[in-house]
Image (cartoon, rainbow, N blue to C red):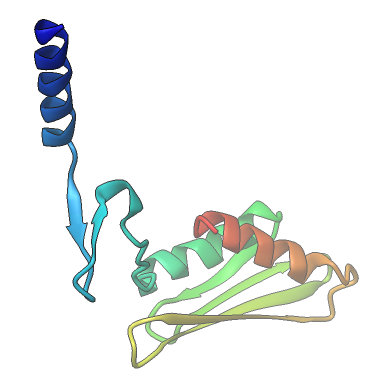
Length: 121
């Protein structure tokens, strides 16, 4: 019986020594597996590349990629889709898609979905 208790004690000590803990800002201690997720704002370059890639994914021809102005323009289906990117004061990036003279009313929705997918959302 003693050897069982010793074995159980050693197993418990070994198991606990392998656990990582996180001290939350409010002082509570939680196991590392329960660390609250934090998300950093997406970078401008990553958002810009995702917007251009989303247009290409939908089969549009990207005719303008102007990082300095934050504009991506794609043409196809007889119309134009424009992505406008703005860096916000908090570091986040606002992306707006607009379309003109496009025959397919769902095109802008699909481009937005491709953008979200490329951003991992």
